[in-house]
Amino acid sequence: MARIVMKFGGTSVADINRIRNVARHVKREVDAGHQVAVVVSAMAGKTNELVAWTREASPMHDAREYDAVVASGEQVTSGLLAIVLQSMGVHARSWHGWQIPIRTDGAHGAARITDIDGSVLIKRFEEGQVAVIAGFQGIAPDNRISTLGRGGSDTSAVAIAAAVKADRCDIYTDVDGVYTTDPRIEPKARRLDRITFEEMLEMASLGSKVLQVRSVELAMVHRVRTFVRSSFADPDAPGMGDLHNPPGTLICDEEEIVEQEVVTGIAYAKDEAQISLRRVSDRPGVAAGIFGPLAEANINVDMIVQNISEDGKFTDMTFTVPSGDIAKALAVLEKVKATVGFDVLQHDEGMSKVSVIGIGMRSHAGVAATAFKALSEKGINIRAITTSEIKISILIDGAYTELAVRTLHSVYGLDKH
Ligand code: ASP
Ligand code: MG
Image (cartoon, rainbow, N blue to C red; front, side, top):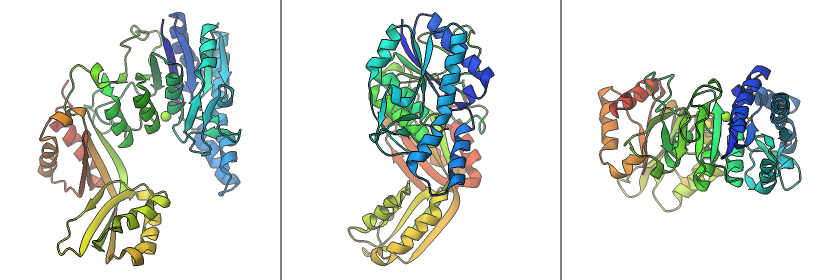
């Protein structure tokens, strides 16, 4: 007998028929004798609709009321799934965040889970009850409902799995696992059987949209074995109930991966903007003077390149921000111009960041050189580079995104089965 948390995303619960299919996945695990808790998202498109309504009601709205409205989507699906499960003879009950309780901080609209008391859920398990929990929500210190930020029900599921010490957290979604790259760009992309927490964190942060970044962080910290799998697969197909190797991608510890490739995947993020400050005075405090105010304005600065100063007096500073933040960033920079001191401010939109990810890079030399050579052979100009122990990110002109992804995918042999 195992303890399993099953999470179903918006497309998996998009209508009553799909909810019935989800219920069959749940029933399969219950019938196998496992202890099961379920976390659901809102029906596909529901949260967008709710968010739009709050904006329509007033563009400047109270974040507590935003939460009161947008948390309702998950409440609907948790109740509906409980009804369907009961109709199939499964002992199920729906739960809102406050009823567990899932405690969060007070950052309404983007709250972080601070504590989940697993004991109540464990008591339910022992009574043979399947708890169907509304994802994406919790209760803030002000005793009001809070939400975890878009995509947050992944985080609800992983946090609950950690709290009850589940053997596995299954994230059911509309794809059947994590791929070496986006299959819409490279049809030769392969589904990975396993990927390490560290690599998945990079993949999620660098543009792959399969999981919310925060959920991967939590899984990594608490070592929650997390499985990405398809809810559209036939719930009763052979192997679906396999405890150790069901079809999908397991996100796990490095030790669980027998044959580690050097490169595991290629991620990309479109819509990056590049900003360059020319002739910035080269003295202590300028970087803080530039990036401090940008951070205060909540602008996510990503790649930062500072040139070596030729004359010891001036240097150039280049960095990227999401295209959507460019106007805000330029306004902030104009304001600090006098104190920081720079000559010209240049900016370019429509950039993409393409990243090569693999834990094997830690022990292999030449991975970056291979990427640079492959891109140059395709005539793709590199505008900026950043690296970490397990990834290389390259900024290029957005028009070359697809070509760069395919080129890198093939040069590291990810096409081969
Ligand atoms: N329904 C929420 C959203 O669309 C949470 C989630 O689906 O993970 O962002
Ligand atoms: Mg999601």
